[in-house]
Length: 575
Image (tube, rainbow, N blue to C red; front, side, top):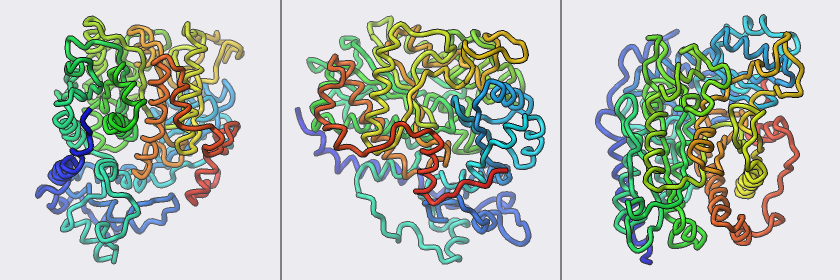
């Protein structure tokens, strides 16, 4: 087999050119429109943003906070909207707490960032904190903390740092004596990881990168770029099919239909780390074909289909208009509330739980199954694949955040999959190999466990157990659909870093470590599906005694406390 790496030097040069045309184009060197640089007390908006006392840890230079905004006044407006917003964590430990919080969320149309059996994170304006507390029981009013106190600055920090040197915002920072990023020394090694995974990437760069991989490795039959359909706004939902086909056949061709693993990201637009991780794992598999016998063996037996952005319309919107946009961009029955939550739009058990019927809700999945265009396109593509001989044997759906490995079913804790023991075994091992990579703890649970209610709990306000309110209804999930309807016996949702310090706004420094965690887990996953139960891969990585030691029994609060101490970010004062 010819080596991949004689191509790497030219590959790096080409991708540098591609990224240069994306980020350093003449259109990006224009000044901010007047309405995007309005003055307040004689100071520009960006200067006020940078001068605000801010204890939440940032790892980027101040140049980073302005470069992407120079020609995007709508982004600037969204930053202004987030100036008075915070993210609050409520410790939820009883059915009564959950029911009260769910009622408040529905009543005030709050944005739920994350929920587990132990806590719920909510984003809201500072002026709405007092009204929220007024409708919550006293036990919840005294049981919360502020996770992110300055949401606007946290949002700004996630955009890429490659900015034109002559932009208006850059000039402001230069006048403040800030050292330009290209003049500062960097400890990063120079390689392909540093080039593409140094920052989060917009949709145009991701598609260009995928086309580049297709053009470079298609000749060897290793990679093929495909489209699984069009989004609501007409964008291609792009994917990479990676494998080593037998007898020189092209990967994914009609004479090479075989067992397939599916990996998706970007179902929720604001979860950028899920998209970057799908791309990182795809690149890691491709570059390891000639180096790692385990990768070669996996790809000789399976095709892996990587879909980094299942929600391209929402992802594009999160870059151009609103960083925290979650849903798709499809029109709904309410003109001013567009978008569907794609993870509540699939057909299996769509109406098993009382679904959210309010289009303005972040968890609105539609008024019928597959009403969301992107969900329908994925289902149509997958059905067509199975009709033509493809057998989906595994599925990984990447999300953020909370560091969890979740297995079916999401729609109900009363339903158990027939292979429950095997699902749990693999889930614990996925968490184990992610932990062995960087020492980060991932917990394991059923995907239904976003609610503390179970059959043993007493009724709430006299309601039967099956009518209890969950923080978020679980019907219509892509996890349950692919597991049940497509027969992918080993299907998982993995919620990536972190556990709340940054939430959806994870710094780009975490892209490569998070990608490595999932790549190591995927090597185990492939080995397990080969029938080795992960044993061959275990011998390659060494014993657990040689790996970083982490207290697996630590609860989520202690894990978060350790992370904040490492970042020198104190817990905000409890209100």
